[in-house]
Image (cartoon, rainbow over all chains, first blue to last red; front, side, top):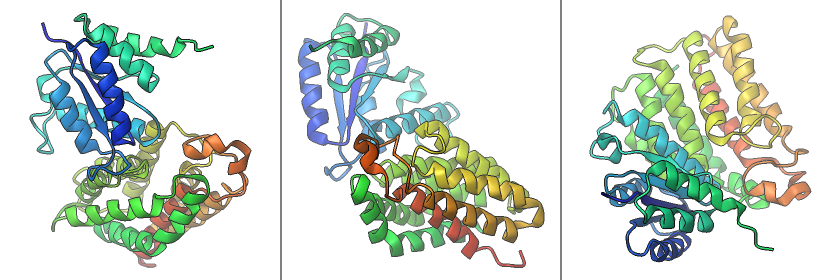
Length: 145
Length: 203
């Protein structure tokens, strides 16, 4: 049984890669955690194309949870989800995406690092998308003082 | 309304004003609005092949903006154009009524995506009054409605100056965001200026 994959979206490539490294370790090597950080040229920014290919890599058949940091990362993730819905009626030649396989892709309303770690831990147990999503969202309640 | 001319003119105006938009953004945002939107619109122009119906022109340009802009303005303007294009469907001619529907769809798309309301100091502060003014004037024909929309967008953008930002980077500045024109509202004015520029007086 495949595990839910995780995609981390940030304005910064380094931030997305660093958070992915941490989450991968917490997922004890069982969970695909893919970064989608920075613009296509590697500078600061967000790229829906990088996001799309990260989702494809993270998708092992059990669905993918997206965790975005802020600003345009969130807007890009939401726009991507809107496009996935449209893919159900393949129209614009972007076939082959996860939307085609009807796997579930969902955006977590979660803090970036804590959410990524919580999602990876729960995904490593083989839990479904809903449970991984809930774990990421619960992570906001972790007190630090 | 010629959709291709509209996007082309918007791209020209944004290119001419790119430095100004970026300066506005440097004051309260992350200082890349003009550069980003200019890049996105160039990609949009390159994506438009000949003989597309107006709705398809807008959805195609919107897709390119989403993909190539790089900042928050990509998904926002991209969604606006895509929703407007979808609302137009396959219609070969865009009259005053069709444009009203398309503009309403664009506004709804931006609202849903950004979750901003009027008064948050965002592009919505120019877009919402412009769309409302267009709808209120559409019965007088497209030239009058487009002119009314531009006037409302300009007033709406101007009115963002005393506002405190509640969205985006500027929102972290709190009261220090007061006294600056919102760059997204400023570029929205250009969208409506472009529309006015390509709408002949007798249309």
